[in-house]
Image (cartoon, rainbow, N blue to C red; front, side):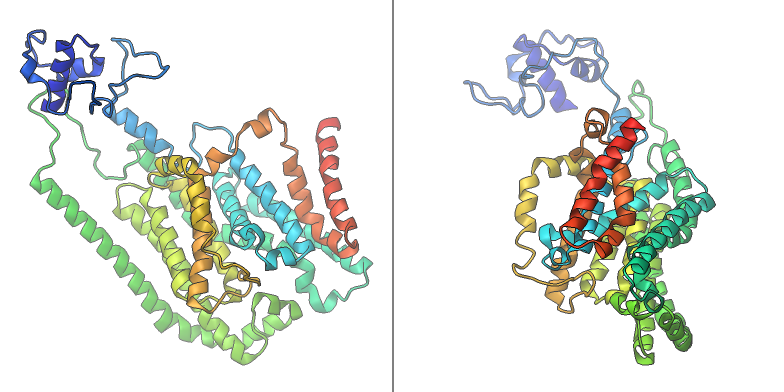
Amino acid sequence: PEKARHRLRYCITLRQPCPAALCSRWSRPGADLMVVAETDKPDDVEFGGEKTSLLQQGLGPSYGKAPPSADAKLPAAGEKEAAEEETDDLCPTSAKYYPFLDVTRICCVGFVCVDHGDAEFGMWNVILCQNWVLQFLFIVCGVCYGMSKKSLLAYELRLLKYAVLGICINWSAWLLMGMDWKDNFFNVVFHIWFIFGIMLYALILYPLRIYLEKVREQSDSQGYILSSEIEQKPSQDDDSAKQTITVRRRAQDRDSWVWAIAVILGGVLALLVLFHVVVQPLLLLLAPLVLDFFKTLGTGVAFWGLPEDIDETYTFLLRICQYTNASITNIYLIVGCTKMFKRRQIAAWIVIAHTYLNRCLFYRAADERAFHGLDLTLIALSVYYLGLLHRRKLGEYLVRYWFCLIMIVIPIWPLGAYGRFDENPPTDVGMRIRYNSLEAIAILTWFLAADRVFDIKIFTEDKLDWMNDWALLAFLVHKAIHIMLPQPWNWIAIIALIPACYFRRHYT
């Protein structure tokens, strides 16, 4: 305050316009501000045409912006912070439409059609598609699940309708081509397993969704800070009631952080002991029943890394215990962080860090993909309800320096790498860290900046909302088209769906 008061006096001495905020906030009651000695200028101001630090403080030229009027009302500090923190939410309530969700879904479905038509695109990891296509689909589904106003039953029935329709389409293609569908029904379902996965995730995460809704309502009513006591700010007119952080307050904050970290780490260790000491032996007793179930699904189970004999079943159950432990720990971290920390936006960061640190350090086989989909859906749900701390500011920098991101990402992936590392995760630690690091970067980039990249005019002015119809239709029928039609007719048929969806939307 003393430094700002000197700056105010110096502006008046040089007959320069003074910001109204400084005059109203830092002027002493009863002081004659026009009688100021030249020696009262602040030390950080230099003469002789040199640059001054006043430019850094926002007192320089406005470059085309109209100067603020003297009686202009500036937002209060609390209002400014609330406005900034509101944009840390992925889908703020102030916006009515979120085009980045639709554009992401459309692009990902397009790449799924390409991969299922020619596997070489995925094998060579063209534009790093293994690291973001399926992952973004899970994230979009998680966000949309949080946004949905339907009941759980209505939500599940809607997904079941599309699943049954997709299976019937695939089954018809197998019948027409004379393929043996009875002994390989797992591959008849094929990509429709994705819908069944979303249905299962929605059922598992429903209690957490209800909890997160209450957390967001509570935090919104308390100014984005979760606390049992709302801190009352003293009046600006009361000079005796200044906001100062005392030694006692600092000690309380330090103790609260230590207690929160101790509770969270203690819970994580308790879950680790529970699953490896109690749950794991119980799961091994179910090995024969699990093997019999997988045999009924046909030979397609090998694609997902599922067991085909009793020894593989025991190993499979041990891994399942590890995967379940990680997913349950994520749920515990969300609940624990929202209980222990004042800002709800911290929780999603911790869950993302735990998920990808676990994936980098510990090997996960092909049978883990279903659990990874659950983790991604869980992350998306938590980011939707809780937001990401400093998402707005980090997103600004990410969009501004996007070229730096490209230079960071390109060297991570080894040139000439061939194979489906998402279906057959690498056992090499270095390759595993490379693959999961790229995925983590893609996920964070989407959460931080996707809403800034895709313009709403794509749908409001260009009227491309009908592409959502194409994405849904292509997802359901593309596998049947690839089965029945050879190249290039399969690609022609999928592309022909685009004008069909356009004419249906605009002329029917």
